Length: 457
Image 1: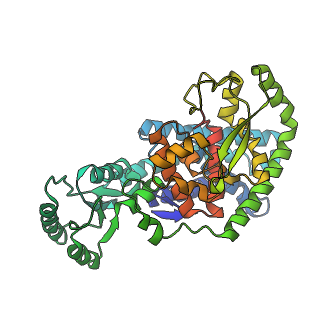
Image 2: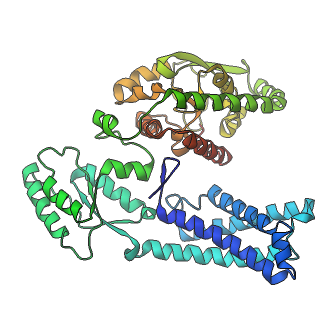
Image 3: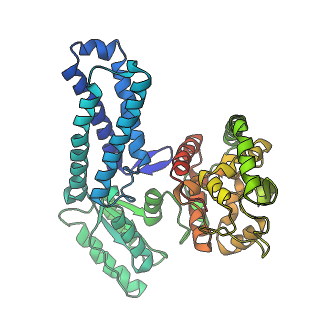
């Protein structure tokens, strides 16, 4: 897998993106040479190359928007092909709109029409080739999972559920024996693996307790033969973009890379947050009267909703949002929002889906209570309980909470203890890999989340 901005992406997905970029550029370049009598002049002196580059970026962005680089979301072949045609159709519409308002956008007569005519079958053929390569055993890394029980089974199922990472589990079996007996069985299995043909490329150690059970010498011999050996937590982190709490020990924080919260880094991030928050509030001012009127007409009550939240260092502050619920929504006490929550007004539901209700929190950013990116601030009533129920929950308060965050773009809203636990795993990943580049990636992902109306309740 390839690491970019502290996020791991499957190598074959990156290759797919590069190939698609080359195909888009090549199709329109070929169309220009085929239809333009003075193709060289059109490309080099009339910004033709720049226009083709912009179409390429637009096509890749639309493919990203429709999840065409998320094979875990799109599993059916017909669904993928339909979305490809949807991307190309929307691509044509946008290009036609620009041509209508500015004919100078054109490279030459019918160049765009021929380019899209060439691109449609080329895209479909590339995806078919990608499926063939992904399903062929020759292009897969052979993996052995060293472990037993549900803990090991979960990593086996994770690998099998993510064919895009290019791994294939071989020789794994759930050995139900005593620890000493299991060790002897694994020693004999590892001895066979050292001579296996075709060879094993990687061994994943998936044991909750390794003391007295891990065949260290045999693993070292295989490591010296060139076989990669890694713990399951490392692979889970790369696959899911989160740090799994099960089996997590304090030593994971003490000895691993990351978890470096430097004052200079926090100052830079906060300065960026302040500038973006100030610009965001200024841009929203013309729309404020319309939102205020809609909230006022939706139900009786104040325009803004204030609620205590826990910030950096455990300090409690009042978060400000546009009111989206009826005024007596919590007459029975504090509770998490649920899907299709009856306490939410119709206008409030729209504000939540579009995240407009969050805009007043830019004031919290200006005050220094929050940053743009970070773990979402939780209510004090829940923090005390969650700190007892979930290990390392207190680590969320080591940095400023955020208007958006890694857990928000990768998981969404958490309304149960299990969901909050999974959100914490994403938050820990963010704290470990926190950089300004990752913040920019999260903000970019947030735009997609808002446009697709995901995660809000």
